Image 1 (cartoon, rainbow over the protein chains, first blue to last red):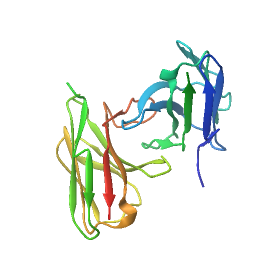
Image 2 (cartoon, each protein chain N blue to C red):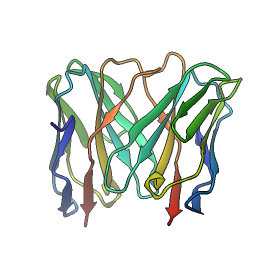
Image 3 (cartoon, chains in turn red, green):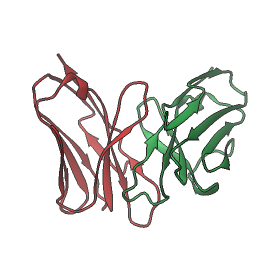
Image 4 (cartoon, rainbow over the protein chains, first blue to last red):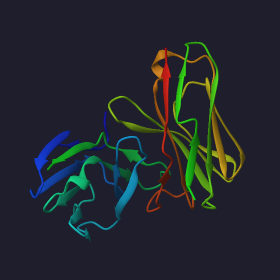
Length: 111
Length: 115
């Protein structure tokens, strides 16, 4: 059973469009992180959210942690080709020292 | 000034062989990790060490043996390689062992192909 479900699995859009990707679970997480992984490289942390309902902005990227701390979303405004990559959410549950990753959303932004 | 480095980047080998992957971090972090990313990009933790002490050992065949000679290095030795071991192996590090809000810094990965 996958603890963190990400959707969609694949997303291909044109430059300038907006998009939202989701990370859902039936379990509560103490914190959720979003990473971006580019081809041939390791994941790089974008943001950590720890409070239910929290919203964080990173330039054109907006991250939200659900009120119940079971889900998160990533919204990108006016996507650019440089946003292309695999977006992974990862969660930590209280008392656990390990991060659990979702299977990722592969985003392609076409020029 | 690479933060987390791994060698080799590519590893192609025959079934049954024994191989090692090395990882070094120059961030002064206490905690290091090994992850396996399969062909569907699913990233799963294998091991974690804190100051040379094993703290996470997921359900991994005992053909996989991590070794941490000091807190800046975490190597992974794999015995009797099998086809299913083919994957990308990532090393990562974080300042401290708690995962709640710590940033993990990943290396570039080692692409292992077992033939």
